[in-house]
Length: 285
Length: 337
Image 1 (cartoon, helix red, strand yellow):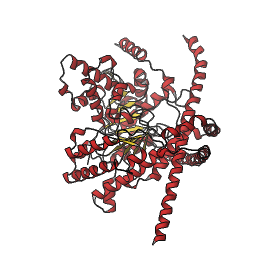
Image 2 (cartoon, chains in turn blue, cyan; image 1 turned 30 degrees about the vertical axis):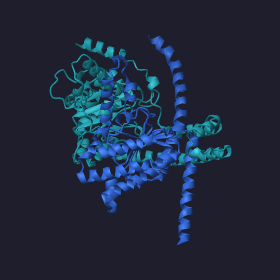
Image 3 (cartoon, rainbow over the protein chains, first blue to last red; image 1 turned 90 degrees about the vertical axis):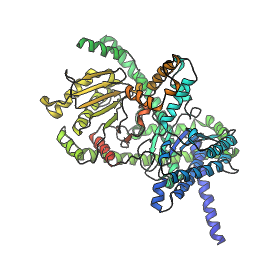
Image 4 (tube, one colour; image 1 turned 120 degrees about the vertical axis):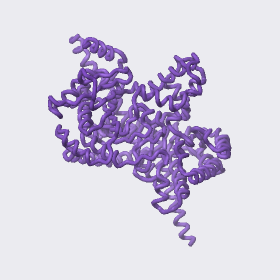
């Protein structure tokens, strides 16, 4: 019995060691994404597939989230934004909404506990979205956690709860108008600053699970930007583990390390082309 | 009439003059793995090992967890591991790229419309549902390559137009980052007309309308403007974030002059205005590049849009179009549920 426990323990620490080494390697490459977004899709389908209750499906989803986030933060990701609850999700059956709220209350409270994710990695937890839609008791819990972690500076976790991308843009527009700034100074940058994710670095990578190729109203403004990598994975969220994330991080780093070099070369080529074509153009004129 | 149009075209050309070379899309990552640039890839790896060291060694101090500091030896080991991982991943990617290229070649043989609308019709009638509005992101390839430059872009665009008409879809959005199609709209119209007559025969060219929402202008294929079989909207980066900024400015002005109350600014109003300024949201978005990049497509209009692209594909091919329609007909959208 004890030997069995020992082997599982050593196995556990071995995989832990590999994980640490891997994240160090990614960190050293200096090409880790700064800001990663997650659409955690497929908890209910997972529950159905495994023949367990919907609530347990959401629990499994939370476990997989904390494992994936752990790897991300170790590898040097600065901000992670997770889509926990859409404003549209209020349309679900009231029993499920209640269960989800219950789960969220426990987990949001737990995040700030001793030895948990936030303390271990120095994460500032922010809950973003239309918070006025939250029940009062949950709002209190949210406030407590965000207050407890607000002095952590190493990394940020944005929990979108309840959130939609359009509401975020709308909220930013409305806030900007109500602030009564001079009209000429309204531009893309200040609109972006007023988004919920305004003080985070720009989104580099968006991960969506369960094989659906839509944004489903998540980070529309940020993800439509040129150069954002969108990864769609054909797995349900609870089945999505650190190994899958490691692969994505490696892919991202590989791509980033090479495309930068490539762009530089390209610029040089462009200049050559320009030098060649310029006299001809002048002749034509 | 026609001189007005030319003047308008010139104005468009002169108007928002975007420096194309600055905004040029960097070539796809896959091209790193082709031909002589493999040597460059090796150089890049060597470079990242040898030269970034001084700059790198400071970073772990700032963002290391558990106050752990990486020693010089450990740092060096990590660098070697990184190179090893890159080499393994690189060779994997090379094989994957070759595999995908072969797959795409096979598809291009299987799905071959050979300029016949009837064949496309046949492919489409099997589907349960087709998108009401289709969008496509097109990229201009560098002027030197085959099918590159503005000419190549217009050729690609008109090709997509023909497939869309043949499939019986009534609305099409063509997006290109720099707005080159917009700038050359008259030339593009001729190009589409020529392509359509190749598909449908010169006496049978379907009528279409080209819309530029940003300028609020419509160009019809014939002089009579009734009953078009396809409406094409030409969008560019300008119609994305910048249009939302413009709308914000307008609304801010109106609130200042007390013509609009703050509580009247709602999501519904914004949606209505943006639909008017840009157009409605597309149901399916096709991307003809190697890995999905939305390139500043209007963000408001991406809420539930289904995306389709093929990894490592780099051409505007019918197989992508028809496979996208297949995928759309099988997908199920349930908002929030």
